[in-house]
Length: 477
Ligand code: 4AD
Ligand code: MG
Image 1 (cartoon, rainbow, N blue to C red):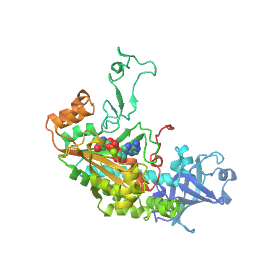
Image 2: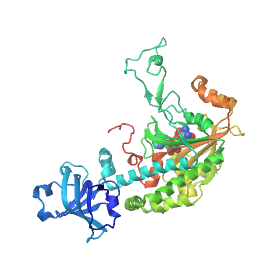
Image 3: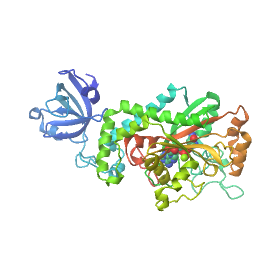
Image 4: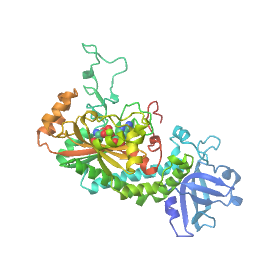
């Protein structure tokens, strides 16, 4: 007999058929009712044991967390809350689970506790829902780009360059600590290291993706990126996944259009394909919000929020306009911002971004034309000589979801900017080559995948939307 998934059985109306289903026991009530889950859906299937004709010893082994194989008859359910159930004819314990030791009990656990049990937390409703939505989002990402003429490129994870020029990189070396050979100046001689040069884990695949856009036209990456920044926030991971489209002949306006269209597409995909999980997550969020003071509660439910983003235009605002709004804002005047906004040129902190999207515009916002001083070297300088064609997409509850730009395609201007920031030309000779041979206007952006999952699932900590989070002082599992 073939094994059916719980999802298949729950949507079946082939009553009285013999079925086989395998999964993990969520609960076992009254020595009779097993709530069985196999991960295929948020819903459990009820399996009814004929306890009078079942061995006592076997009944004792039907515990929360145990893996079981059940053969039985699919029938219309008598009970409330489900349409079908399985009348168990044969039950085999595939793997026992000692109820005194199994950490995931059938009651509410705090997320902090579940993070410590990240290897088991996917067996809870919340985490299985989040991870199914995450999977659907990944699929939608590929589908969007593949349907729109983009090619998927895999940029290196080990690299010799610092794409963001921020220096927050994890080193990759084969030297033993304290035994690294030194050169005549007494510095570590990376010439003798595995790659013959200093290398690190990539912070972004952009620079390599740009070279591919200049041959394939439209490309995207979707891979892991690493940042050694010591940010212990609910929005930062040391290892996260980034989606980076890069397109030849796109200017900043086309880039903004692409980011907006892309985000709307993947959210719509989840609305269409993850209904049960979204309903569960919406309810979870509702319960969580009830514990907060009224003023901090969201006006919209999770699904309403997703629909709102899909149905409304993102507001496009220049950095200069944003600074005016912030400077004249109530929290700035009342000195409520931790970093007060006094003058043009200030870097925007998360509190400012969130004020703009959550209080002022109440919708996703694309900020563009930032001061050159606070942005990376590769962004195209505007004619005013002081702003660059940068764009950040800001989301309610999240802050920055996307960072991107039109790239500096003029060789001389790019070289000048690199010189000003002490970025050696020898290190990026290959990047400069794209500006020497057939240079063209081009643009791209990076979207932090976990921030997207965070928004879509209504979770509040980024550690809860990636299977095994890497954060300062934490690389368990
Ligand atoms: O703004 P960032 O640093 O931009 C880049 O790396 C560009 N090279 C992208 C490009 O143009 N191709 O990062 C892009 C996005 C951010 O907007 C944010 O969503 C996410 O990556 N991000 C993080 N997500 C989780 N944890 C972190 N530590 C993150 N740092 C950035
Ligand atoms: Mg950024």
